[in-house]
Length: 440
Image (cartoon, rainbow, N blue to C red; front, top):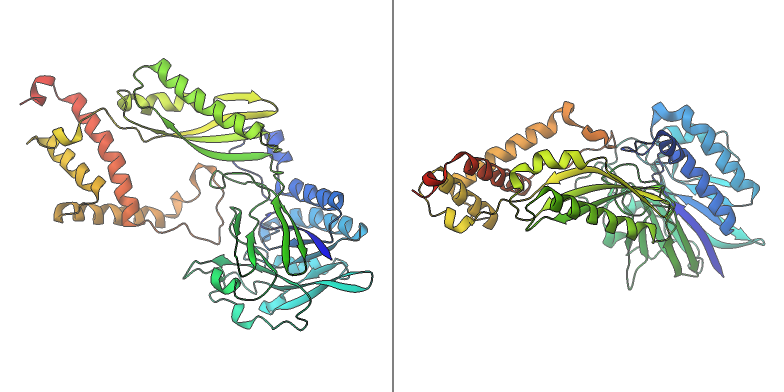
């Protein structure tokens, strides 16, 4: 007997996607509107249950904005005889229980209150068809895995789905760190997780599949790719179907644009426009509901325009191209091009340019001597100092989980920054040195 589920998490009701210039679209693409679409789709698909893996409500200062839409959706699902099971994450650990006091407990199951595993059962014609076990955040931070407390199955013949808000394979995380291997060793039929906004589907030949459905509505440029709830079908302990329903109205993408050989403004525009059109065609023809494709272009390659990209690129930000109901818009261009310089030859010179070229060679090959090691250490320390400065968090309008932290910059991060900046400096210095002096 198969069971059909619609699963999602990290809706963050109260949020709207960032970097969307059209206010009307931003409102229609809000997390609250996405929740309404999820409810509509669950009813249309006639699923047996909707599973919510935490962070449904953004956080406490959005409580009143989130309560109304969420409750109405639960009532509509209940009227359609669709059960809902949910756990709380690090955002709604204290807000969720207050909302739930006003809902019908017969068709809405809040699992894992107080950091204790709880179970609920789906029934059809008086017969149990699925067991769901869930665990909720009891506080904003959870430093240990709750899997060691997972209760044993009372009925081995009844398939079980696990519902959990957790950080997979993130040792030292403050947000319920769990290991993928431990999840797949539990013997459950399927796991639905929350916390990471990028969808991730971990398959397994012997253990259960583990799905992090991601945010159904993409909220920021660091959440690229298609987004939407997932339709899951389970028959016994076997996963029959697991597919995303790409309902997000906004899609963010990063694209590389190779500018190798480009030597004029017209050539530059042609390459950028072609990259935008290629991305647009892929999304518009992919059966998605996206109305805005927000692009961040990484400009790469060796070009004689390298020194001018800094002034050319910003003028292309804001370019738009509509096609087949989707509008592609260039949100940001990042200059990662290089000047047309023979670095090996330049590094043989005994001048300032030669010193810089030799440093770049060492950085690119990751051949660290004492002088380069000191440079790397200093750059790493400065990056980490900036990362700790609260004034620099959340720049660019990008959504940031206020209860999480950006990764600490590593020496590898510093190396990449130094290489990029070193090439820009090399080009700037070369432009200032008369040709006759370069050959000395």
